[in-house]
Length: 281
Length: 338
Image 1 (cartoon, each protein chain N blue to C red):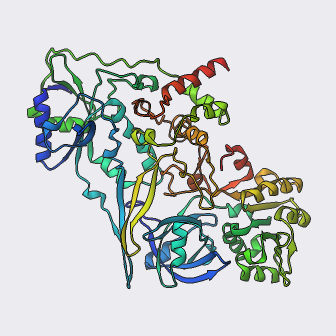
Image 2: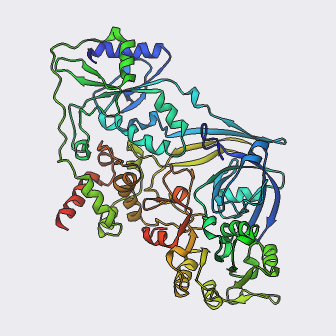
Image 3: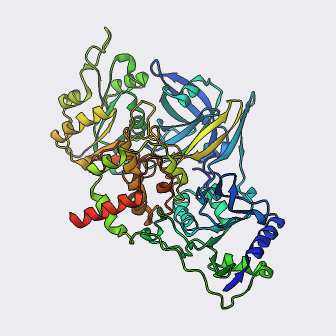
């Protein structure tokens, strides 16, 4: 945790230990904190986020994409689309970045023990679920069936390709991967179609099941009715909201949706909570 | 504890405080306008006008460095800014609408995480409030539950006397301490009468009623009607004693620079813009709605306070004449009708 007594805006320093190019513009950093005490004390829960700084360019907000079950390092995954993320992209293995966090609430994983889990993700929205997926897989015996429905525009746009392969090969995970019509190559061994329709076809049972949905707003919009049709209640569905943030601490005043501060009250919400908010996100 | 102080002694008090090495921030004529600024001498003190900008900068500067960084072959070094280095400050001549604002803002800067940049300045500042004996058309403190003689937020409170000089009341222990320490500038209260407080126009608003309307009217044609005028200049937020939204950005190069926290405004188009281009508030009515909602509903939901002291600056200086007091009256009237 951060030292709350002093400068709450001061980041920990971390070294980029590994860079993985997920797609042509999405990159994973594996980070190791430089301070030994921080390395040992830094703890977080799946769903929490951090502020990552490229010194000289500023800070950007991403989830912590690795699982808290994997100690000693954290991972983030970002698309280079703005000033800060472009600057992060220019950094190399061995370079230093700043990390402030962890912030926000998290997935109530303890409440999922003994249940079936259905993860539904689209495009770059897999990282916020991937932390939880590994968290569950690292304590596999605590959960029943695990289904992952993941799609992107094309095969090349899928992130964590190496891990998709691992999940596909595991007998205790049911991975359904899909690409948009026309997005498949000759080697493609997954489905073809949009995530909501593929989910509908996969038809996971809603009984004793939690659905975790992350994706572009349009995907979420069409996925929720499918889940409802499958019998999921609003309280059985979790998602994360992404809003522009600066402080991450409930002060700078820009991530609010109505009176809900995504940085403090979120980013993890149930579908019921999201529906109760003013539709301004 | 109540005393009096002459105009001349007030200036001498400033000089004495400066001599002790403290900072005195007070209204002074800065070129063409009156602003709350650090004084160099007591002679600069000018208590005749409500300063153009609020006194929030005393605690929450327009722009401040929150850390420095330097990078070389060995890596990055981050330097801290130590809030302990902030000077002891007396904010003198704060009008009730300005003096009350920090006590509202304390909640946001101290909940869960303490922003020591703000809080240390608060701890090190003594506020000497000043009653208003005149009001202009834009003043509406009485409409939002304050008054021209309200001592809330002040440590000491000055009330102008009919024959010149001020009655000085110790509101807090901190104020009493200052008064005792600088006893030579104060006299025992005599029979002199205080000037009558100003009487801003407008009846007190029923803020509870307004909030209950806001609770149920996130979608309402009113927002478009009001915000059709708004040009998104952000002047209202920058002049406001209670608006506190900020941005954080880096200055310098990747080799050497600093990170700064600086004022921002929810009226600006890019305020909520995502890197992807998606903007949850992509038209002005949504932004203006957020401004009203934040002040009269969201802040209240979270901290039980209204984020407005009725100083009237946003009305006085809005380039297109948007009048928040009139909007609140309209909303209140709607409740009567509905």
